[in-house]
Length: 188
Image 1 (cartoon, one colour):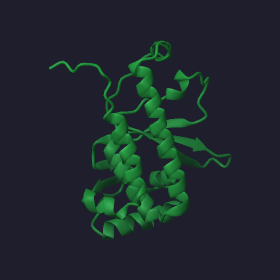
Image 2 (tube, helix red, strand yellow):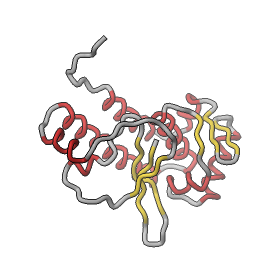
Image 3 (spheres, one colour):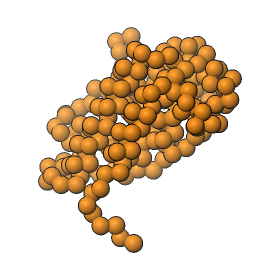
Image 4 (cartoon, helix red, strand yellow):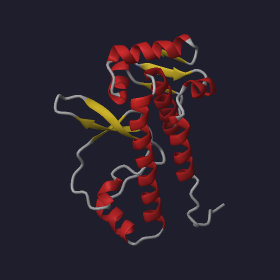
């Protein structure tokens, strides 16, 4: 799982995108972007594939399955960004933290991960004490446990109930993307 952040003039960083097993990192480069104004940080180790930008652009420009998947992925990222913007304005920090942890679990396909409250504060755009207070609420309700630098989701379904509606909006769009029928026959 990786996070894309934007950095402000005061040095503060806030997450503006999240990437998981299904993601295409750098998709904007396929459409001609010369340089990224954001940074991408790997948060949870995993496996992925890479290729040269030249090869990816060539395949993208051919049209077809890869281009269709890339554009559908851009749509998923736009939904995630728009929903997160609304969520940040509308919902309480503990609800937003629950949403973020669930999306992270979905994308990393894991319910235990190494991350500090300081890191979570950057991702959510809040202060560390505010995020620590929100994490304490989730811990007191038996939804998560954490020790220094490690968070574990104890009860996914109850954490989903605690999260704001934005979790399901984002998850539904991501599920729609990953269920895309490419038309390529599966070899058995």
